[in-house]
Image 1 (cartoon, rainbow, N blue to C red):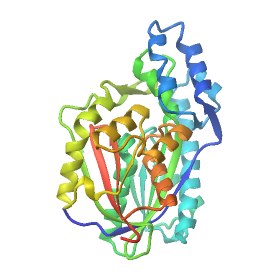
Image 2: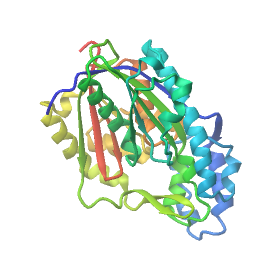
Image 3: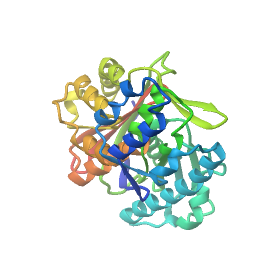
Length: 352
């Protein structure tokens, strides 16, 4: 597999101002669905078992108790996703010691709303991006988007040595909350998802937190039904048609082993796996599937507890936590997403 040599120069995160506790969300869900959905009591323990204490939302939690049209949701997406895009980007640029004028290309990852023109154009003036800045909007990667986006940014940076690539992943998962969907998947989504954004600056030939040494993906056949969106006149509706924790437990290890083998590595070579925490059971399944000691994925549990599952940015939130703690010689950033796909990036720490 070709080696990648781009550097992760900075990483930053941003969240909306509204915070809801898991207890509050569970209470509202019972009020909205308890009497209309006979199986609600059987599904309700997911709120307690998700490993989430709170999450950030683009609107106060009461806003979600009313039916919202796709037009309403899109209006909120365009304004709030742009705002979070700008907030995370400004921090990432500042930490990299550069300005918006220094950015040569922007990779925008988002799957929870539709924006045409895309988000980077809406944020361009506020960030002072150049008129000749390259634009790479990416849709449809879901929870794997932050990791795949970092891979794309690294390859673009390497293709033009010395250029600065800005990656921004923004997801407003709460806008997919639906009052009309009497499904287990909809209740699970209410228990898991929050809103947030993450940004990173990637460049070759610069000192950074880590070298992006390699990137890889693995898509399993006949798995389109595991995760995705169901589109109808009211907007996006979440699809969870199989047990993702059980799937990870059974199939993650051989996929990871194959990826690392192509890089001349093995699981024992990796000092730290940095994972997208989709939920408490998924974190447990990853630890078991990769033969990690229980409790190893501590950053993942902390991010999940504080922010919930924000889809694409979540793995980058964990990465920011890992960078702050100090990256080891070799780590693997990974996330599972629609496809059903595993996306990984191998990071060589600054001291490696």
